[in-house]
Length: 122
Ligand SMILES: [Zn+2]
Image (cartoon, rainbow, N blue to C red; front, side, top):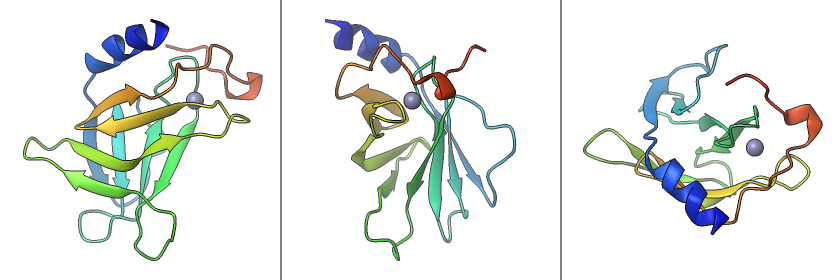
């Protein structure tokens, strides 16, 4: 029930895709950054979709890395990432799919975010 609620909220938000050479200093929410540009996508970075969490998650895309995510770009400019994103419980425990620029929660987002990762700003 809670998961459904989170998924309904998440479905309304569409992430912008930004192809950049370097990760900007002020990363925005609801934006997925692809670092390295189209020629050599190196890693993807996204602020945790949990509103209460301020972590920037880095996902390896480089073919040289064994544990990496596959990136799919769609006609409308949105992207999908495979496999799902699962942050360790120590950090915040979020587990979700990133599909066509939208978040799809796998597990219910944990209500408690570790203090050091908490975000108080909206
Ligand atoms: Zn988080």
